[in-house]
Image (tube, rainbow, N blue to C red):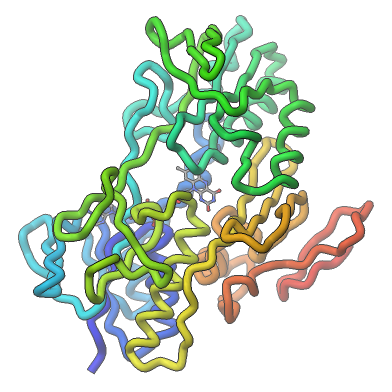
Length: 403
Ligand SMILES: Cc1cc2nc3c(=O)[nH]c(=O)nc-3n(C[C@H](O)[C@H](O)[C@H](O)COP(=O)(O)OP(=O)(O)OC[C@H]3O[C@@H](n4cnc5c(N)ncnc54)[C@H](O)[C@@H]3O)c2cc1C
């Protein structure tokens, strides 16, 4: 008989877990996907909305689950009873499980009361309007302390600068971040490349700075140094809290503690992946790697010929700039040196979330029917050691070729 494997959350980690379990556990698992929202939202492309570009893509979850032979329950999970192996849903009904994978993401909270919070469900950010007026604006882009995934803010600043140039606006853009250097998590090589890009674009950077609001928000107090800077508009990322699902352990901020195989600490048969876990860096690619580790461990436990690897974080980020994108890669668990940064693809398919199963599945119309690589590092594309003069393109089979 198949084991009942329930996945909570239809976001990045939930979908990757569903795809990986479908592949690795096969008939051994009867899969059920539970999601509060009926659609999967590709959050990385939300950054294009404030500049009047296409809305971020969505995929209906019900047909996607059906295609993988999984049941789909469009409801919120309200609690877990690990002793009875039951999930309580919002309508009060109970869903039994043999193995549970919790992928509920995080909850955003505005960090600066008077700033434009991005992303926000309240008032959509409208950078196009800010830049379009006759007056040049002083616009601050703020990474608040405690935010570990700052890339979207760099994208907003760079894309806003491209748009300002196109509109003939003399607006002054400043990026304020507690990071020691721009996008420091990606390592020295990427950080230097991003610093150079910001300088070339005339975007001022205040690194190593914590910003606080004063007098209604337009004035920011930067520490250390207690410097005051005035702005016409302030855009800030929100801070994140964990899902704090009743019945499961959580740290002080509601994040679920996991071990290297992504098992929830102290709870039998429950795994967690993605932004909702206590892993400090909240990023989609890392969420997929955690989901893969959970799927391998579950499939192995169900008797599949899979050797479960612990989660070894490799950060892959594609920075949208309003011009040529920058691909960055860093082995944040150690051993990867200074990391890499390149305008060329460093992984395949070269989309913003580098999930081993998710990316080929979502973009199968571009890459053909997905054949997931055997391991997460197999998604990578080797660049020639020598720098090349010509732009590169990538063959569908993953081998680089110089056009
Ligand atoms: C603007 C922006 C840009 C980004 N850019 C990138 C990028 O370039 N690359 C990258 O790798 N990452 C990027 N990220 C981060 C990435 O989107 C997240 O790390 C990723 O979505 C986390 O996946 P998750 O599955 O943990 O959570 P989510 O994707 O948030 O999914 C959570 C799911 O759980 C469901 N849910 C929540 N509560 C319940 C409940 N109680 N019951 C049932 N279902 C529930 C939600 O409906 C949702 O389906 C970006 C994020 C943002 C906001």
